[in-house]
Image (cartoon, rainbow, N blue to C red; front, top):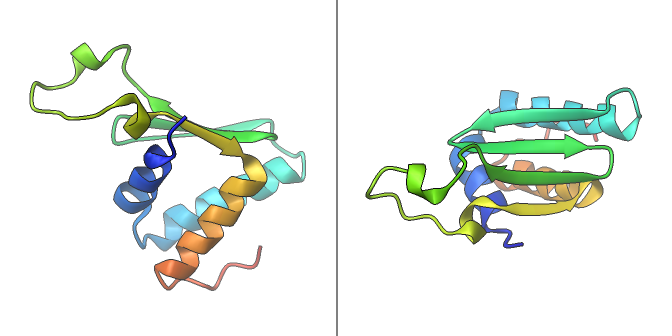
Length: 105
């Protein structure tokens, strides 16, 4: 699936918000340490689900017909998945990109 959804989610939902980035990294670490089974984050009409194996972004609506008339989204914009380790690496890279390098992985 297209990874545009992760890019959109990182830029629009996370931005340079240190609290949100830290919360995600903490959730990833709990999953890696097997102290959590999954974690879900909802925002922007998208749901990010993290499991011990992967990360998935999908829409929180049943069909594209439910969106407002002027909304322009494709499935590639709203659906993506990758391995948990890859998601963590991307998240750490995003954190460095926005200048928030104080989290110990």
